[in-house]
Amino acid sequence: MTTAAVADPEAAYFQTVEEFFVSRRGDPLFLSNADWLLIRKWRKAGVPLRIVLRGITDALDSHAHSWGRNRKVGSLAYCAAEVDAARERWQRAVAYETGEGIGAGEFLRQLGDALERAEPLGAGAASARRALVAALRERSEAPLDAQALEAWLREQEQAFLAALDADDGGEARRQAAAEVDATLGRYRDRMPAPVLEKVREESIARRALERLALPRFSLFGL
Image 1 (spheres, rainbow, N blue to C red):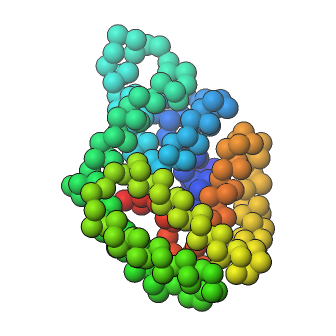
Image 2: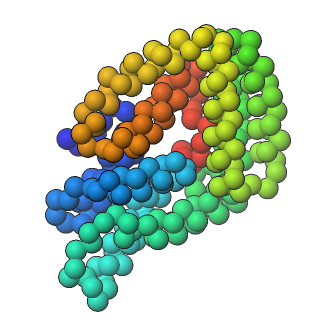
């Protein structure tokens, strides 16, 4: 199965990393539980897919020109240091808006605009929106640290989703969960339970926000 066949964007992140690493390594290899958990760590930390792939490429290119090039890379953990280095470069670029996507400040402004257009909202979510839009506008004009900003955005997303749940008694979330569970069954025998649960949580959040034409509250897309 190719990545193009994956219906869920959250599962695609994990599968794309798996397929890219295996293809670059040069022979079939099943990821270990530790490898899946490492991908989960990158996903949870807000590392965009292209940055992970860049780090893997850098690590394996370096290995190909090293004294140990005849030894196979046995684990995705071999690439962890280069992924971290690629993430640090990306975070600096995002903070200073130097070419990695639209820049964090512009992302915050666009997210605020999207929230103002989001309808229909119940009373709780509408109140949460007003406070969040004001905070987004303020932060967009301040010095930015990508890692701290990503953590703050995730907190705001959780609070906004909780307000949506409170307004409708969790009905939209239950519908989203049913849709997600129908698409993730094929991964139950491939991914460790903590990884699959992370994919499920992220997928439900994405679907809840998409109903309001909202993106994830994350710098992933930058």
